[in-house]
Length: 467
Image (cartoon, rainbow, N blue to C red):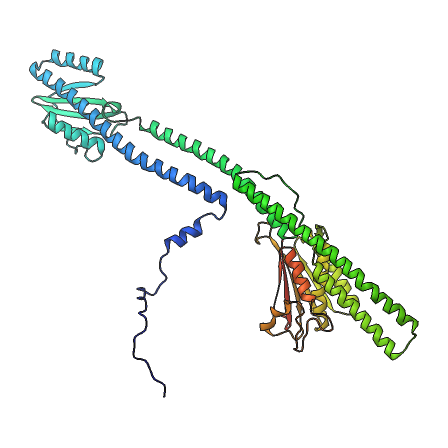
């Protein structure tokens, strides 16, 4: 009898209310951030500088504007109070004219004493830094009924003070009552920011360019293309990385050359006894036993070719600009001569750098395998201009209407010497290296080969190549 534990398990985290996805601001910010080192470095430099400029502009400019405006308003109201007190000591037309002329000449304030006038019925200006400052100063220094308008005119502020028999009207210039030159500070800060950002862009561009060259060289080397030697440039860390890459490339090329030389020697040593065997069999005449021995020797030669081709890989051949459509056409023609029914469909510009002979071997292995086990084969080449790497990509689809292979073995068949026991053996009668060689060549060009179910009912081989 199975016992059921009554102990409580770990406490589950509380469920989110509403059941919807949680808000992840950092994930959103990560998606909006540029992916390149140049863009991210520029943001690291520019963002703090812009943020600092904004904070300084708001804090300093706001306080500066408020303080200057308050002092200018206080000075202007003090001058008005002085003029009004002087007039009240001698409230005559002659005194009003003399005070008005003195205020205009010495203080720059147009002043008029309007006997018999009253304050306007419209509300006085309120709200805003200037209006609040003037209201406070007039209440404290003059303590009389007043009316101000700070918005009706752009160049003047209309101030009216009531006295016993009339109204004192002052059209104070805007520059007398509030700070009007704040734009100079803003222009200076914006100009300085633009200059700093321009310098940062130029400097970063020069620092990022060697990294881009190194990345391009590594990418080309990974695609099996020739990488010319270049002089390391940039920061010391970038120079060290470039020097390490070139030394690594040289070691890999030396290793490949040594392996190729060794394989050439092995090939020569093995072919020599096989040739002697063939000559001795030719001298023995014909017979059933002799025919079987000749078939065995031919099989040994094919196996030797496969082994050497797999060990040699795609090296030993320089990349050249190749019309892939023309190359696929040659493979199709060869397959048709072998008795396979192959249909071809090409889309877009299919020109790219390839090791032509090696890639032809890759295509031949895939198409021949499809033709062995299916009555019909379809080869489609498509160029995708929006692919990875900026230059797009090319996909070659090889479909057939055969029996296919089990889905769980679609990756296993790429292992060297792997042989299927199912009805469809992709390398029947061979060494089990056909697909391994094909994938090795595709990956040597920076691409890959994958298998999937074909819409035609059989197997689909997808050869993906970056351009």
